[in-house]
Image 1 (tube, protein in one colour):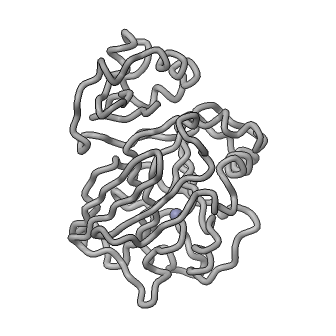
Image 2: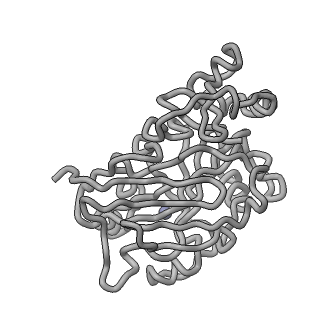
Image 3: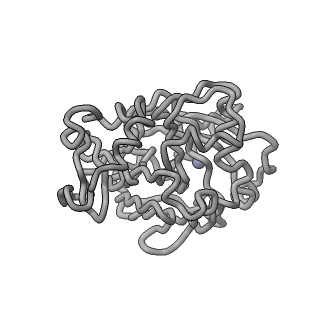
Length: 282
Ligand code: ZN
């Protein structure tokens, strides 16, 4: 099942058609996408009975917004692919390095990306959406707490990220539009192998990142277990799971986004994000 946020309303997407959840459920679920996650098991059961492909309506992809637009927590993991750790000159971690992206940076799949400086970088990432509260869960039961997967971009302003005696990641990764997500949430049973998905990013059509999520040092179940050993994960919360090699700061010479660039981010079995880079604050 694919669940999207179409102009602020929860929809089920099938064959490029969207079925409004609130209308189809006679007001039981929705209309806001965030409300689905609070009642995810009941929603999933109901959604299995609807025929979105035949009853839905066509829509414009530019009207899609973030699948989980107002999570209570957004976790992001650094250095979760060995080849990316190597390109940044850092050792592979022994525990998941964790920061946040503040929720105000979250946007949908097809957006303009204002560049606040000339050192903005790209990081395509698999994003986990939590569907059932998780406190101290084991890796073995972690997937049962996941509502679904979506594509994310962890856009990063490298100058402020590395400034100061102790680099901080959270603000530098939370400028407006720096948390593009979508185009929709795909439920875990839709994938032939939910732990091994092709993941790639292209700029102006030329591939800059290409990997597989099976290369993660800490796979999704281990991340859910690790994070839930500290924090209670709540329905709708997001986990940005880290990026494979090929970011701009790891290149020689370094490369960053400029106005006019088009960033395309794709994960197998989910879909595509498209950001058009534009002049931002100066
Ligand atoms: Zn990242």
